[in-house]
Image (cartoon, rainbow, N blue to C red; front, side):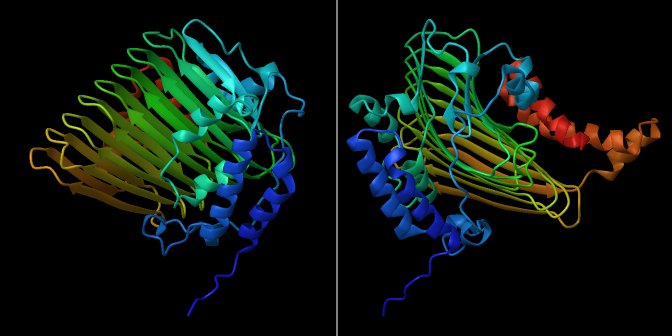
Amino acid sequence: MTVAVMKTKAEQSFAEGFNEMRATLPGSAAVREAREGAARRFEELGLPHRRIEEWKYTDLRSAVKEALPARSGDKLAMTIADVIVAIGPLAQIDAHRIVFVNGAHRPDLSTPGSLAGLEVESLASTLEDAQATEFALSGFAGQDSNAVLALNTAYMSDGAIVRVHAEAELEKPLLLVNIRAGAQPCFAAVRNVLEVGAKASARIVEAFVSLPGAAGDGQINTATQINVGDEARLTHVKIAADDGSGVTHLANWFARLGKACEYRGFQLTQGVNLARNQIQVAFDGEDAKLDLSGVFLGRGTDHVDTTLVVDHAVPSCESRELFKGVLDGHSRGIFQGKIIVQAVAQKTDGKQMSQALLLSPDAEFDSKPELEIFADDVVCGHGATCAELDKDLMFYCQSRGIPTDVARVLLIESFIGEAVALVEDEAINEALMGFARDWLSK
């Protein structure tokens, strides 16, 4: 007997919204075909729910009550001063800046995208080109069960295609700024493709922020494909910091690492009511190094889920993962981390740690570390801790005249600072701590 599953209001609205705007979305015939296929796939899958193992802690089917309309930000009146306000601590970084508003590229608010050793193009402007289309879609193959990615493929409106030329060394970081603005709640689907050529070096920051006065509700679906060439170095940071009371942030990262490259990834999530950060990293070349870290800060009823899979498919690679969370009120943090070591991946060195600091008896942290090892000459391990602020350390601070509130902030900054320090870029590091301090001050 076949049991029909009733579609939720949000699932129906996403399907209806796509049907209404499909003719206005950018892209060639191949892109339209990909969109149609993704929309059909989303209708088959529906929003993920707790009966799916990797979604058992984050039931989107229950949490997402409605689908907000997609509203382009290409005609919203904004100035460079507004951008400076929206990005907060990032404004102190001397960087190239590419700005998107509600999912639409704003060249009037951006710095030039083509510099020595660097090419940046708007995804929307390239989707009519067959080669660019293949470039933007190929890295997401094999994700047929990923309903969030299917929704992104169907709706993707814009994003950045970034190419760092082989052997280039970018002197300044590149900021990809995505701003949520306007009084009307909206849905935005953004897709970025980052390609760092062999022996190149770059620092790229993705920022998802809101302009003061933006609607309290918002939905962001973002997907980023990362290709790191042989012997290249990439520092890649993502910041999701919002002040909206009902913001949903769904993100996918897919990274492929070449031979002897070094990839440092970091994610900061704060002020988002519902966040799901999915990260998948595959080693394609030997002797590559991965350092993946992050900080999530939750209060009220915030729900922050970090789920990652690191696939060691070749020998002699190293991976490190460290994620730290601070949870207050009735907030909930989730960390699901899986390390896979294939049979051919001898000499793998992989370590993973997740830690949470609970500031309230009503806060919750769920951790599910996993190791799947099919090789026999490896060094792998994982761990997880969860605790409240150390009372002895609090007493130590107070006994030296430090007020209680100040002592709490100092201890929390010290706790998350271990993960932030792994970014190894002074300006970006300070900006990340600036976002954390803004959150702590509230």
